[in-house]
Each structure stands twice: as C-alpha cells, then as structure tokens.
Amino acid sequence: MPERILIIGSSGAGKSTLARALARHLDLPLIHLDRHYWQPGWVPMAEASWAAEVERLIALPAWVMDGNYNATMPQRMARADAIVHMDFPRRVCLGRIARRIVTTYGQVREDMAPGCPEQIDWEFLQWVWNFPRRSRPKNLALLQGFRGPIVTLRNPSGVRTWQQAGYSFGDMVELGAISR
Image (cartoon, rainbow, N blue to C red; front, side, top):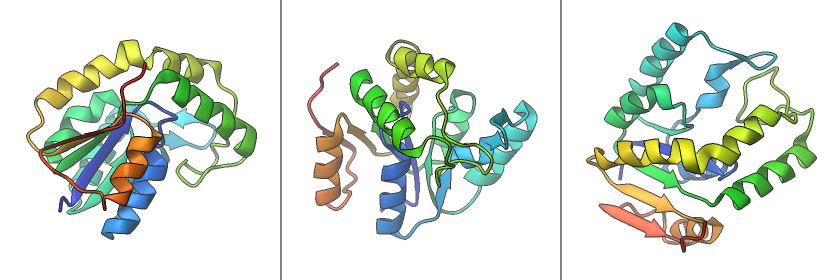
C-alpha cells in the first residue's frame, strides 16, 4: 500500500474530505496544503517560504496530502507513491462550493489555516469555473510522467465505489462516468 499519496483536482471536488477518510483508513499523517499556504486573513505565504515548506512536508516519510498549487506539483508528484486525481465536472464542484459557503460562512474549516474563515470570493469562483480549461490540462500533462498508481475519480459515485472497495490502488484505476 502506498505511504505518500497526493490528492489533486478542482476545488469543491472533495479532496480534503477524501484525504481525511483515506488518512484515517490507512493510518497515515494528513496534510492539507491550504493549512500551510494561507496565513491569517487569507494572506498567501511568500513564494520562497512556500517552496521551502513544501520541501519540508514532502520529505516526511508518509502522508496523505491534498491540494493543487501547480508551482509545486512536480516536486510533490516526484515524492508521491500514488496519486488520486479527482476529475469532477465543474457543476459538481461549484455546487459543492455553494453548499460549503452556505453551511460554513464565517467559520474556519478544519482543512483551512487559522484566521481564514469561509467567505464568498468571486476570484476563487472564477478560478473554479476556469479549472477545466486552465488547470486540468496541466494536471493531466503532469500525470503522464507519473510512474506510480493513479486513481482517477470522476464523480461522487466513483468515490463511494472506491471507498467500498477498500481504497484499492492498481496501476491505473478509473471510477465514475465522465460527464462534463
């Protein structure tokens, strides 16, 4: 079973939720990159500090790590034993984000850094809207060079199927129908 698992995909796909469940199931340390990147008041970490923090985190012997952060994706992929790619449709991600805003507005979620309460952020919503066109192709290109197992989950049903199968990792696992 892999000991360093990277979970990537659009915001709203459920990366943090799956990371918590997978880390608990495999008894591995959990790393939410958002907790490390953001400073109170939604201030991003300085680029050099962020690169050093990512190097520190990936050097740990075992982890389940969720987050995109494309600038550090190659280093994280090079250290990962397996990748879970949550390749969900835009409508699912935006619907989940809307629900998250309604249910946790003004609160700091457990996967976020202290001092970063849930808010309505139009720039973030645009980023999610544009994810399939801008970020997804970059992720897919990086995945082509990955030599370990890749689990691609295309919808919530695919996640449930994978969980019910005990989080099995093969060379390539793909679950859930593609619907864009």
